[in-house]
Amino acid sequence: MLIIQATEQDLDQLFEIEETCFSHPWSKDSLRSELGSEHNIFLAAKVEENIIGFCLISVIAGEGTILQVAVHPEYRAKGIGKKLTSAAIEQAKELGTEVIFLEVRVTNTPARRLYQSLGFEKIDLRKGYYRDGENAIIMQWREQNENSGN
Image 1 (tube, helix red, strand yellow):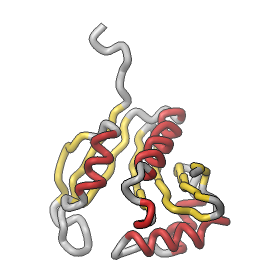
Image 2 (cartoon, helix red, strand yellow):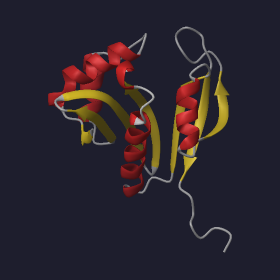
Image 3 (cartoon, one colour):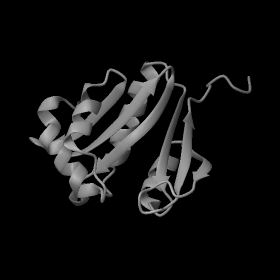
């Protein structure tokens, strides 16, 4: 598996993953717009010529937001989401990002565990955040100060 920068050439495969993974997927035009944004880190996981997942982080003024993480169902529970998200966080850190936020469904236990394993902590709850009325947990990651406590 390779982790690559997603490009416009990957749009059809990214959209296919989006439609497969989400009950209310983003439109192809929305994905195209995100691919073209200078504020975004858009990484894709590739096996041979096939994209099997992606991670999208928006970074503005030292603050990041994970907008989307998706892995094709056939490739879940293999650490791909963690590798993608970790690689995107590393790129965000290189851009000076010190804090990253995300929203995740209360019922999405695998994703919540993934984010916790990467150092994200629950900071709040957004009631009725999703179209179906489900609540979202707001999570936050902060750059660890290696010299703290010294």
